[in-house]
Length: 195
Image: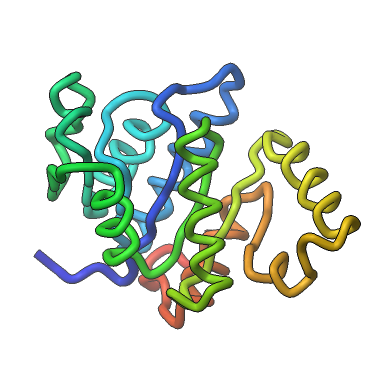
């Protein structure tokens, strides 16, 4: 198996969401990863956006590393078609292994699990626990409310502009993905760089 050009950790919902743009974006992200010789690292689920991004990555020839706690495997949420599927004891181990295997992080639309994972890697970046790029894909304005709340944090001086500069936010996957990979000091494979 060829070593991937980059490894992108994607956080996203285990549900598809109400807007078809969410599924379309997950499919586009997976397609881009596979088309550019990359590897997806994600939560190992087969449902919702998680399953869509994994299936799209594999369909485009990319590698997929799923990392899932035992409790979720037992509920039959695991995606057994992954290139690698790591079954771990708990969520802490899952998140640590996902972070270790990633060159960059990207949050797509999702629920409280996605929010928690995104904020954690952002906080870790601020604290210097890693120096990997962190991105937020704001599909169909899904994160507009979050961005407004973060601006409130800035206005009320609980956050700084320096902290905000540690994340990259865009509504267009084809702009954000190469930016994240390049910020990690890597290059997408040359075959479809013109996309």
